[in-house]
Image (tube, rainbow, N blue to C red; front, top):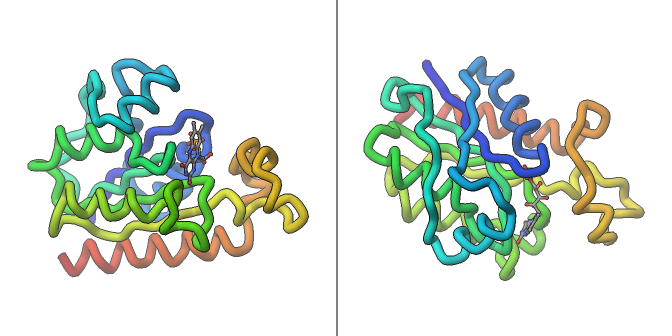
Length: 185
Ligand SMILES: Cc1cc2nc3c(=O)[nH]c(=O)nc-3n(C[C@H](O)[C@H](O)[C@H](O)COP(=O)(O)O)c2cc1C
């Protein structure tokens, strides 16, 4: 089984997560590069879905049994580099799984800034090629006394020191499900 892990990351969390997933799945790893990597522009293009696109992906997407995409949630939206990747390579993608290191927790996933809306949007974009979608909220690695401190949560970066316990377990379940679903497709 051939799997490609692709990521877009502005501050490093999704890059870290993508590396972890690629290692577990023994997959190839590459990044999605927007033509303009400027934060306000990317937020605006994520909200309006108007964008200047992404640079071509060097891997041959059609050769992979599945692609796992990692990227953050911004302003409750699926970010434009991920959206653009799906739109551009939809025909070549055999199966798409999605993982996000995001700020929203499981408890607020259905709210305005929660991750659930992005999961539904991916399903809409890719249809029956949609595989596993999983969130890895930053709060899973934030100490109990700082979980309600938004600034501390936003400043937290995934690392070998904090990627332990519940988040590690979630990664284990995610990668197992990716393998199962890709085999059963
Ligand atoms: C401008 C901005 C807006 C964000 N909005 C949301 C949001 O609406 N929902 C959410 O779950 N996380 C939100 N976040 C948190 C990011 O998803 C989170 O910090 C993520 O881990 C960053 O990933 P990266 O380091 O790979 O860029 C936001 C972060 C930024 C910088």
